[in-house]
Length: 317
Image (cartoon, rainbow, N blue to C red; front, side):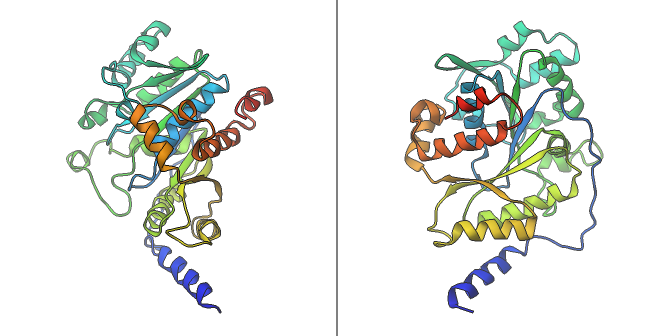
């Protein structure tokens, strides 16, 4: 065995230490899918870029002619309003949940409580998240699904930016979770969305630490009987952290240890990503030829496959 092969083998062995294989598995029974197609973006701790991926997938879908709603459903650290450069935002999620429960969530209220983001001739609707992370108890799975049912007639796709898990395996708990252990836990909504989302985009970084965190997070998915179709995305991909064989190494590691296939590598594109953040814009409005934007466009085509007409998919090219 060559020195390089020994190094790669040792590296994968290191990544394999991601939890107790003998831990009991608690399965969640699969339930009916949501009343509208839901694409949920989720990833482990460490800022792998799930919010950036969610925003840009939503923009690409809107440019394909779809009626898209992007929701900041990160109940731990909502950030999409800031990333989109929005200062004065409507009540958004909390108000829509309340109106849906009262059966008063009309099209007019929807437009009042969401933000319209112009994408040329197209439009993306954005729903701001909670204005305080301590209000996470308001977003129950039942209220959230009721709200989606109200959107069914005027939204084609809902894209979600999800929070990371707070009480899984490592038992890293948020104080509010500790204070309410006998009530609904902070991860109840997250688990429900992971099960019921139409398609689930799992976002990983590409350095050894990010890979190990991803493998740990993937254990949560193995507990759930999901309806969702899973797409694995390696974000900020570069070879400087894992060597020239980084792509093959990550593909084999995730397939062997998590039984997950990598569907998309998004190139590290800091100049364009930072400029998009500075201007509060999706990449497609900043530079269509950006390497990251091109990769996200291809990912969106995969997400749309089998969901809409070929003509709509063609608009992404």
